[in-house]
Length: 271
Image 1: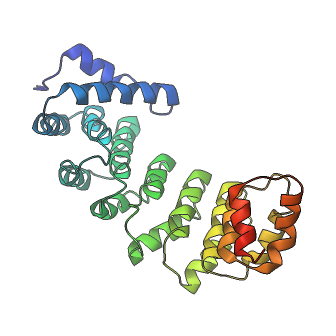
Image 2: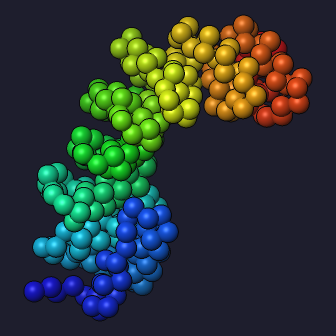
């Protein structure tokens, strides 16, 4: 029998949402924010999360992760209990209810962007069958972990080959901004230079430019001749700093393309 300290009608509203529908999901987290704000202490907030986790029904247990996800990275009182709850979670849950629970746990961990303690627990979810869970792993790598440990590099190198473009994009970004640099990593990134997803290809170009890999030069020369070139290619050009890119960069500038990143790229390439 449930001992949750919530009115049954409120619990029903919290459970009534579709995580695949953006508006429904936003409404759900707005409600979780309201519940979080109504509790008057961290002890009560953590107590409610633990009460959710103690319930047998997986959708109710997911609410414990959702409650702490709205806390995000503002304070760290919730990080260790959240990690312990996520580590205790089986990764083989079946059906829609099990999927909701895994998504909630991965999302709550991914929301803590500034605490390296969540890295290991988050990587547990990297092989999930659901692309949303894998995306949470890719986008949730803590920003202060640099360079990444080899386990994280191995996971992200796998995720940049993911069938889902959002997973590939965020995994490439996570690798691009780190200091890790090996021939194997560069080769893996180079295979993304002509990815069908434009954002993923641009992230790979930036990653290789930061590492001064010459394979990116012809890619940048072609990309900078496109009228619709994205600004990430300007950042890549600035990172590479090769004078060979000046003609294409100046042509964009002379054609009226105004962008501060374009100006930085011209300067970095010697213009």
